Image 1 (cartoon, rainbow, N blue to C red):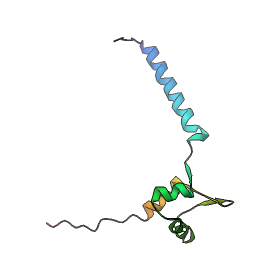
Image 2 (tube, rainbow, N blue to C red):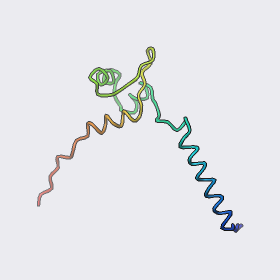
Image 3 (tube, rainbow, N blue to C red):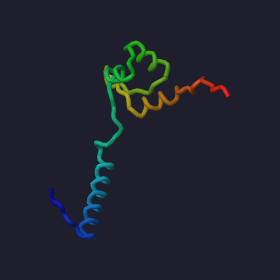
Image 4 (cartoon, rainbow, N blue to C red):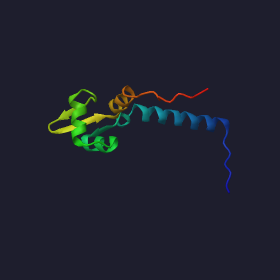
Length: 94
């Protein structure tokens, strides 16, 4: 096993470089909210094509359509799930 020794200055330089890399990654255009198509949405939610259409028609899920292709933002899917969250009906006896 090899052991490396760093000076405090070298250690601070490494931390600075890591911080700069983190900032670059966070500001990257590739770090945007993921977008999925209708097929991926149906697989993710385990629903049929008709159910996905029903949800869109009734305004339950926000979507974008480019030509015949339908897309969803993961942020919108998460929002729909949160909006439809129900509290447990279970009441503990005392």
